[in-house]
Length: 279
Image (cartoon, rainbow, N blue to C red; front, side, top):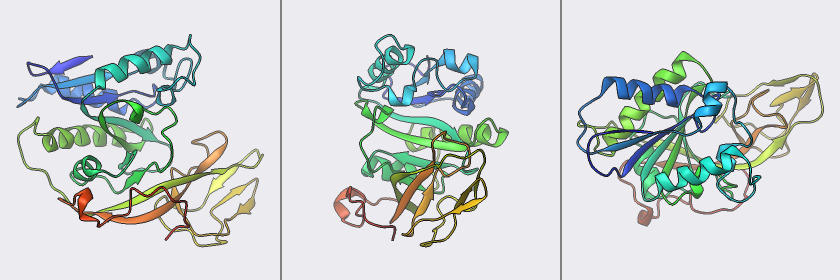
Protein backbone atom coordinates (compact mmCIF):
# COMPACT_ATOMS: atom_id res chain seq x y z
CA UNK A 1 0.00 0.00 0.00
CA UNK A 2 1.15 3.54 -0.76
CA UNK A 3 -0.16 7.06 -0.49
CA UNK A 4 0.10 10.31 -2.39
CA UNK A 5 -0.21 13.46 -0.32
CA UNK A 6 -0.01 14.06 3.40
CA UNK A 7 -2.76 13.46 5.90
CA UNK A 8 -5.58 10.99 6.36
CA UNK A 9 -6.97 9.97 2.95
CA UNK A 10 -10.66 9.50 2.24
CA UNK A 11 -10.14 8.44 -1.40
CA UNK A 12 -8.65 5.13 -2.54
CA UNK A 13 -7.63 3.32 -5.72
CA UNK A 14 -7.57 -0.48 -5.72
CA UNK A 15 -5.75 -2.64 -8.27
CA UNK A 16 -5.07 -6.36 -8.65
CA UNK A 17 -8.01 -7.77 -6.73
CA UNK A 18 -7.44 -10.44 -9.38
CA UNK A 19 -3.77 -11.20 -9.92
CA UNK A 20 -4.15 -12.00 -13.62
CA UNK A 21 -5.62 -8.54 -14.28
CA UNK A 22 -2.50 -6.38 -13.92
CA UNK A 23 -3.77 -3.14 -15.50
CA UNK A 24 -4.88 -1.61 -12.18
CA UNK A 25 -1.57 -2.32 -10.48
CA UNK A 26 0.30 -0.89 -13.46
CA UNK A 27 -1.85 2.25 -13.35
CA UNK A 28 -1.05 2.66 -9.65
CA UNK A 29 2.68 2.15 -10.28
CA UNK A 30 2.61 4.76 -13.03
CA UNK A 31 0.73 7.19 -10.81
CA UNK A 32 3.35 6.79 -8.08
CA UNK A 33 6.13 7.33 -10.64
CA UNK A 34 4.44 10.44 -12.06
CA UNK A 35 3.85 11.76 -8.52
CA UNK A 36 1.30 14.39 -9.55
CA UNK A 37 0.56 17.30 -7.20
CA UNK A 38 -2.52 16.35 -5.21
CA UNK A 39 -4.97 18.61 -3.43
CA UNK A 40 -5.88 15.92 -0.90
CA UNK A 41 -4.31 12.55 -0.02
CA UNK A 42 -5.19 9.32 -1.83
CA UNK A 43 -4.59 5.74 -0.72
CA UNK A 44 -3.18 3.32 -3.35
CA UNK A 45 -3.77 -0.39 -2.76
CA UNK A 46 -2.42 -3.47 -4.57
CA UNK A 47 -4.99 -5.89 -3.21
CA UNK A 48 -3.49 -9.31 -3.97
CA UNK A 49 0.24 -8.88 -4.52
CA UNK A 50 0.98 -12.61 -4.28
CA UNK A 51 -1.54 -13.54 -6.98
CA UNK A 52 -0.21 -10.67 -9.11
CA UNK A 53 3.35 -11.96 -8.76
CA UNK A 54 2.21 -15.49 -9.69
CA UNK A 55 0.06 -14.18 -12.57
CA UNK A 56 -2.98 -16.10 -11.32
CA UNK A 57 -6.50 -14.90 -10.59
CA UNK A 58 -6.16 -15.88 -6.93
CA UNK A 59 -4.07 -18.07 -4.63
CA UNK A 60 -6.71 -19.91 -2.57
CA UNK A 61 -10.06 -18.21 -3.31
CA UNK A 62 -11.42 -15.44 -5.49
CA UNK A 63 -10.75 -12.25 -3.52
CA UNK A 64 -13.75 -10.56 -5.11
CA UNK A 65 -15.97 -13.27 -3.61
CA UNK A 66 -14.22 -13.36 -0.21
CA UNK A 67 -15.89 -10.44 1.57
CA UNK A 68 -18.17 -12.74 3.56
CA UNK A 69 -17.75 -15.99 5.48
CA UNK A 70 -18.18 -18.23 2.44
CA UNK A 71 -14.46 -18.92 1.95
CA UNK A 72 -12.21 -21.33 3.90
CA UNK A 73 -10.73 -19.90 7.08
CA UNK A 74 -7.20 -20.73 5.96
CA UNK A 75 -7.53 -19.07 2.53
CA UNK A 76 -5.08 -16.23 1.90
CA UNK A 77 -7.85 -14.18 0.32
CA UNK A 78 -10.03 -14.39 3.43
CA UNK A 79 -7.39 -12.44 5.37
CA UNK A 80 -6.81 -10.11 2.43
CA UNK A 81 -10.53 -9.35 2.24
CA UNK A 82 -10.63 -8.45 5.93
CA UNK A 83 -7.59 -6.21 5.50
CA UNK A 84 -8.96 -4.54 2.38
CA UNK A 85 -12.37 -3.96 3.97
CA UNK A 86 -10.62 -2.29 6.90
CA UNK A 87 -8.51 -0.09 4.61
CA UNK A 88 -11.58 0.96 2.60
CA UNK A 89 -13.94 1.64 5.50
CA UNK A 90 -15.49 5.07 5.04
CA UNK A 91 -13.60 5.69 1.79
CA UNK A 92 -14.58 6.80 -1.69
CA UNK A 93 -12.94 4.21 -3.92
CA UNK A 94 -12.48 2.81 -7.40
CA UNK A 95 -11.38 -0.77 -8.14
CA UNK A 96 -9.77 -1.48 -11.50
CA UNK A 97 -10.36 -4.76 -13.37
CA UNK A 98 -10.14 -6.14 -16.91
CA UNK A 99 -12.12 -8.74 -18.87
CA UNK A 100 -11.92 -11.27 -21.68
CA UNK A 101 -15.22 -10.07 -23.10
CA UNK A 102 -15.16 -6.38 -24.02
CA UNK A 103 -12.36 -4.09 -25.24
CA UNK A 104 -13.85 -0.83 -23.94
CA UNK A 105 -14.12 0.45 -20.36
CA UNK A 106 -17.38 0.19 -18.44
CA UNK A 107 -18.33 0.72 -14.81
CA UNK A 108 -20.03 -1.60 -12.32
CA UNK A 109 -21.85 -0.64 -9.13
CA UNK A 110 -23.82 -2.58 -6.55
CA UNK A 111 -26.64 -0.08 -6.88
CA UNK A 112 -27.16 3.03 -8.94
CA UNK A 113 -27.04 5.63 -6.20
CA UNK A 114 -25.86 9.23 -6.35
CA UNK A 115 -22.21 8.21 -5.97
CA UNK A 116 -22.34 5.74 -8.87
CA UNK A 117 -24.18 8.24 -11.07
CA UNK A 118 -21.81 11.07 -10.27
CA UNK A 119 -18.53 9.18 -10.67
CA UNK A 120 -19.45 6.98 -13.65
CA UNK A 121 -20.78 9.93 -15.65
CA UNK A 122 -17.36 11.60 -15.27
CA UNK A 123 -15.36 8.61 -16.48
CA UNK A 124 -14.63 7.64 -20.09
CA UNK A 125 -16.73 4.48 -19.85
CA UNK A 126 -19.35 3.19 -22.28
CA UNK A 127 -21.86 1.81 -19.78
CA UNK A 128 -22.78 1.60 -16.12
CA UNK A 129 -23.87 -1.83 -14.86
CA UNK A 130 -25.93 -2.45 -11.75
CA UNK A 131 -25.07 -5.89 -10.36
CA UNK A 132 -28.77 -6.27 -9.59
CA UNK A 133 -28.24 -9.16 -7.18
CA UNK A 134 -26.72 -9.88 -3.76
CA UNK A 135 -23.06 -8.97 -3.75
CA UNK A 136 -21.97 -12.55 -3.06
CA UNK A 137 -18.83 -11.58 -1.21
CA UNK A 138 -17.71 -8.87 -3.62
CA UNK A 139 -15.75 -5.82 -2.53
CA UNK A 140 -19.06 -3.91 -2.53
CA UNK A 141 -19.64 -5.52 0.89
CA UNK A 142 -17.04 -3.14 2.33
CA UNK A 143 -18.39 -0.12 4.20
CA UNK A 144 -17.38 2.33 1.50
CA UNK A 145 -18.58 4.06 -1.66
CA UNK A 146 -17.06 1.82 -4.31
CA UNK A 147 -17.31 1.64 -8.06
CA UNK A 148 -15.57 -1.01 -10.17
CA UNK A 149 -14.27 -0.32 -13.66
CA UNK A 150 -13.47 -2.90 -16.32
CA UNK A 151 -10.63 -1.20 -18.20
CA UNK A 152 -10.51 -3.40 -21.30
CA UNK A 153 -9.19 -6.75 -22.46
CA UNK A 154 -7.15 -8.66 -19.92
CA UNK A 155 -3.37 -8.11 -20.13
CA UNK A 156 -3.65 -5.80 -23.13
CA UNK A 157 -1.66 -2.59 -23.47
CA UNK A 158 -4.93 -0.80 -24.14
CA UNK A 159 -6.35 -1.92 -20.79
CA UNK A 160 -3.28 -0.53 -19.02
CA UNK A 161 -3.60 2.81 -20.81
CA UNK A 162 -7.34 2.90 -20.14
CA UNK A 163 -6.77 2.09 -16.47
CA UNK A 164 -4.36 4.97 -16.04
CA UNK A 165 -6.70 7.39 -17.78
CA UNK A 166 -9.62 6.20 -15.63
CA UNK A 167 -7.57 6.63 -12.47
CA UNK A 168 -6.73 10.21 -13.42
CA UNK A 169 -10.36 10.92 -14.25
CA UNK A 170 -11.49 9.45 -10.95
CA UNK A 171 -8.98 11.55 -9.02
CA UNK A 172 -10.14 14.65 -10.86
CA UNK A 173 -13.79 13.82 -10.18
CA UNK A 174 -13.03 13.40 -6.46
CA UNK A 175 -11.02 16.66 -6.38
CA UNK A 176 -7.76 14.93 -5.57
CA UNK A 177 -6.27 16.29 -8.80
CA UNK A 178 -6.96 19.76 -10.19
CA UNK A 179 -8.89 20.15 -13.39
CA UNK A 180 -12.32 19.74 -14.88
CA UNK A 181 -14.06 16.49 -15.75
CA UNK A 182 -15.92 15.81 -18.97
CA UNK A 183 -19.31 14.34 -18.20
CA UNK A 184 -21.97 12.91 -20.45
CA UNK A 185 -25.10 10.78 -20.66
CA UNK A 186 -24.40 7.13 -19.91
CA UNK A 187 -26.52 4.02 -20.63
CA UNK A 188 -27.36 1.90 -17.60
CA UNK A 189 -27.90 -1.86 -17.51
CA UNK A 190 -28.84 -4.33 -14.82
CA UNK A 191 -26.89 -7.58 -14.67
CA UNK A 192 -29.32 -10.50 -14.66
CA UNK A 193 -28.98 -14.24 -14.37
CA UNK A 194 -25.95 -16.10 -15.75
CA UNK A 195 -26.16 -17.90 -19.09
CA UNK A 196 -24.99 -21.44 -18.46
CA UNK A 197 -22.66 -23.24 -20.84
CA UNK A 198 -23.71 -26.71 -22.01
CA UNK A 199 -21.04 -29.38 -21.95
CA UNK A 200 -18.88 -28.96 -25.05
CA UNK A 201 -15.27 -28.84 -26.18
CA UNK A 202 -15.51 -25.55 -28.11
CA UNK A 203 -17.56 -22.37 -27.67
CA UNK A 204 -18.24 -19.33 -29.84
CA UNK A 205 -19.97 -16.02 -29.18
CA UNK A 206 -21.65 -14.16 -32.05
CA UNK A 207 -22.91 -10.96 -30.43
CA UNK A 208 -21.49 -7.79 -28.91
CA UNK A 209 -21.82 -6.94 -25.25
CA UNK A 210 -24.40 -4.22 -24.49
CA UNK A 211 -26.05 -4.77 -27.90
CA UNK A 212 -29.61 -6.11 -27.77
CA UNK A 213 -30.06 -9.78 -28.66
CA UNK A 214 -33.52 -10.52 -30.00
CA UNK A 215 -35.68 -13.45 -28.93
CA UNK A 216 -34.51 -16.69 -30.59
CA UNK A 217 -31.51 -14.97 -32.18
CA UNK A 218 -28.41 -17.21 -32.00
CA UNK A 219 -25.96 -15.52 -29.64
CA UNK A 220 -23.41 -18.32 -29.18
CA UNK A 221 -22.61 -21.89 -30.13
CA UNK A 222 -21.41 -24.99 -28.31
CA UNK A 223 -19.56 -27.46 -30.54
CA UNK A 224 -21.16 -25.72 -33.52
CA UNK A 225 -24.73 -25.93 -32.22
CA UNK A 226 -26.36 -22.48 -32.13
CA UNK A 227 -27.79 -21.28 -28.82
CA UNK A 228 -30.60 -18.78 -28.37
CA UNK A 229 -32.91 -17.41 -25.69
CA UNK A 230 -36.74 -17.16 -25.76
CA UNK A 231 -36.63 -13.55 -24.54
CA UNK A 232 -34.54 -10.57 -25.68
CA UNK A 233 -31.63 -9.50 -23.51
CA UNK A 234 -28.51 -7.36 -23.44
CA UNK A 235 -25.33 -9.45 -23.05
CA UNK A 236 -22.99 -8.44 -20.23
CA UNK A 237 -19.50 -9.92 -19.82
CA UNK A 238 -20.35 -12.44 -22.54
CA UNK A 239 -17.35 -14.33 -23.92
CA UNK A 240 -16.39 -17.76 -25.16
CA UNK A 241 -13.88 -18.62 -22.45
CA UNK A 242 -13.90 -15.83 -19.87
CA UNK A 243 -15.76 -18.09 -17.44
CA UNK A 244 -15.53 -21.85 -17.11
CA UNK A 245 -19.23 -22.64 -16.69
CA UNK A 246 -21.11 -19.62 -18.05
CA UNK A 247 -20.96 -17.42 -21.13
CA UNK A 248 -21.82 -14.30 -19.17
CA UNK A 249 -25.03 -12.64 -18.01
CA UNK A 250 -28.45 -11.70 -19.33
CA UNK A 251 -28.80 -7.96 -18.97
CA UNK A 252 -31.65 -5.51 -18.98
CA UNK A 253 -31.31 -1.94 -20.21
CA UNK A 254 -32.68 0.49 -17.64
CA UNK A 255 -32.19 3.83 -19.36
CA UNK A 256 -29.51 6.45 -18.85
CA UNK A 257 -27.93 8.57 -16.17
CA UNK A 258 -26.96 12.15 -16.83
CA UNK A 259 -24.52 14.50 -15.11
CA UNK A 260 -26.01 16.03 -11.99
CA UNK A 261 -28.93 13.60 -11.84
CA UNK A 262 -29.73 12.69 -8.25
CA UNK A 263 -31.49 9.70 -6.76
CA UNK A 264 -34.32 11.97 -5.62
CA UNK A 265 -35.03 13.05 -9.21
CA UNK A 266 -37.05 9.92 -9.87
CA UNK A 267 -35.61 9.81 -13.37
CA UNK A 268 -34.33 6.26 -13.12
CA UNK A 269 -35.74 2.99 -11.88
CA UNK A 270 -32.29 1.53 -11.29
CA UNK A 271 -32.85 0.78 -7.60
CA UNK A 272 -35.49 -1.82 -8.47
CA UNK A 273 -34.36 -5.44 -8.18
CA UNK A 274 -37.08 -6.88 -10.44
CA UNK A 275 -36.21 -9.61 -12.92
CA UNK A 276 -38.30 -8.33 -15.82
CA UNK A 277 -37.32 -9.05 -19.43
CA UNK A 278 -34.91 -6.79 -21.27
CA UNK A 279 -36.51 -3.59 -22.46
